[in-house]
Length: 236
Image (tube, rainbow, N blue to C red; front, side, top):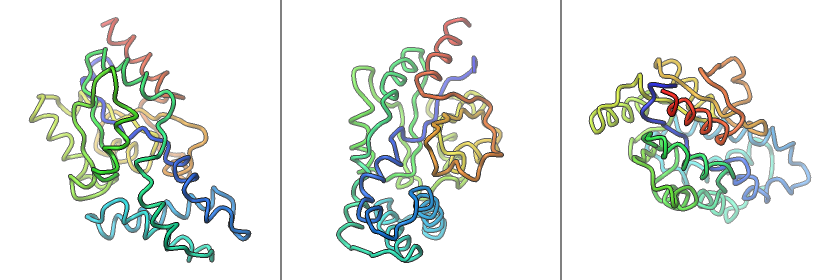
């Protein structure tokens, strides 16, 4: 990690908690299966939609995924509930350790880069909870900007080329930092990039079914990762 100059993050919001809060019209139905099955089904449907229509904005993806998951699980569909879920991304909570960790990483002289599957409007709300006294992200790349969704290699090439052009940062000086093995760790590894998996034990989406995908480094929290990397940089 000592030669790292840029960290490329997924958006550090709690996808599952935010989704759970806004999927209550599904979870409260008597015939609804366990949350793990709902999330697994929803994740697979989302991935299919994103692969089939790479330019569909994220709220539209969520609304269509809501409709399809209710059909697949034989649950009642409510248009207003689907719309609420689709527009909820900006309200999804940040993980409690994210802001402090970002502050530590920024003070270590690293470029902090967001690479997220959300749309621009949603991320503008999310960043309000992540940025602060420590500063702001050096670059933000969304699926809306790029025109496709991770794990498409196009997304990673777009980010890497921008970092090289703007900061002369080589891919070997980049760390991919994320919880999702499907969207971030697996494609990052296949592209020869160094990866850091934040192993949040409650995570389901993008983790279940990808147990064989191994990152170069693994930490239990962003806080632990930030402290370790800052110590490494200070001891060079």
